[in-house]
Length: 257
Image (cartoon, rainbow, N blue to C red):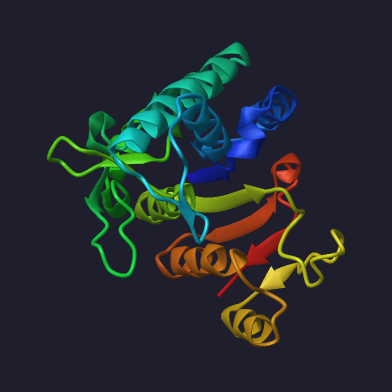
């Protein structure tokens, strides 16, 4: 029987504000068993880029990462945000280590090819070294993964945090009984975007397609759910979409086959 492991992905807004970060770290610290934390940090990157006179360009919610922007996201994601989380966990008795994909060659990516849009230095995940991560968690060290990977040729690549969480969970599913939790500002996937209590408790592929056809599920939630079903298909035991304040209860929307 496989040991249980939880992969938690939290958005930048949660980890960039002192009050919400502290609550998250308390809840995360209380989770039983092995765990991995994946974080964003986009608002901080946008703010610091602006202070440096660098314009942030977004397309469909994804950051265009030119050479100057890459310097900013590397500093912010891999430094400021990541190390603040690690320090906060250490203060709560959790032995954590902050990593980018380049550290220990944990996550290798390929630079996204130019099609309709040139995203610049953005990576699409090619592989995750699950054994390297497992060697850390089995020593009760919690990996805290920044949304940065590398191409093996000396280049850091900005990489979507949802994707990193999903690919990490898939890779670790070969070794552990993995639950993947995507945290965002809502209580789960909503049937009515104007009613925060209209949480859809369970989503299957058939229900997902039905809700997309009816326009109930749309926009940015679609790729998040596609990632979730892909994780289930790859052996992840359970995917939950919920608010950061509910990770201990595992409330929200559960994704099932």
